Amino acid sequence: MSTAAHQPEPYTPAMGTLPELRAALAGLASLGLPDELAAFEDELARTPLDQVPALADRYRDYLRRNTSPEAVSALTITPAASAAELRRKIAEAGR
Image 1 (spheres, helix red, strand yellow):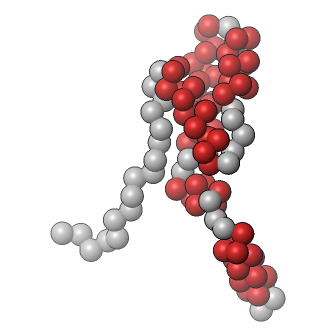
Image 2 (cartoon, helix red, strand yellow):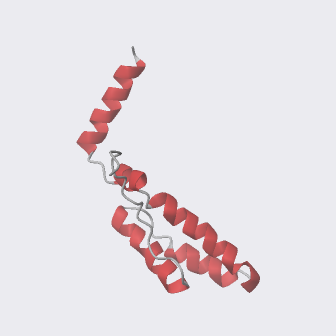
């Protein structure tokens, strides 16, 4: 048995189909992020069919960055915890 700490797998929403990608984009609102679904739909409507895979990949990458454990933690930190972290960093920089 390994003694290394178990690292949870990063959460990645299902994004294999356009409906799943749309649902994942709409779900960003629950993290306090702008709903990118309208922007995606607008871009999708203007994108030539042969370029749709690249467009989907770009939005998938955006979702992966913004739903990583680190990103979610940063987005959901309380103001008090944020202020404490800022004070700690300022104190470290002053040493």
